[in-house]
Image (cartoon, rainbow, N blue to C red; front, side, top):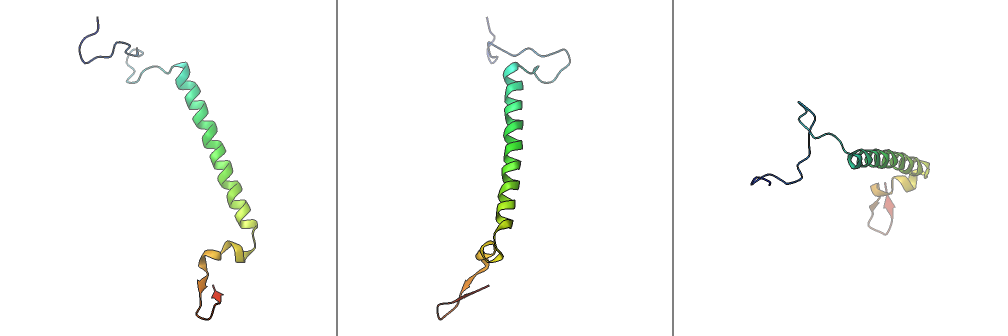
Amino acid sequence: MAKKNQPRNKLRTKAGSPRPAPTRSDVDRDATLNALSAESREQLRDLIRRRLALPLEQRMNFLRRRMSGGGTCL
């Protein structure tokens, strides 16, 4: 019977280990997170490359300011 304030299915730890031993699902989760992280870095590099490939006028469009008279300037 479980004591109060302790979960019934408490993870067992290795002797002297402060954390529970990794389970198969923990290993799968870590592998998935590492794969997602690598893919995210790759997509960020791809986004930067695509934006740098644009002409300067399109890349720097956020600097444009409206002028009185209907024009814009950098």
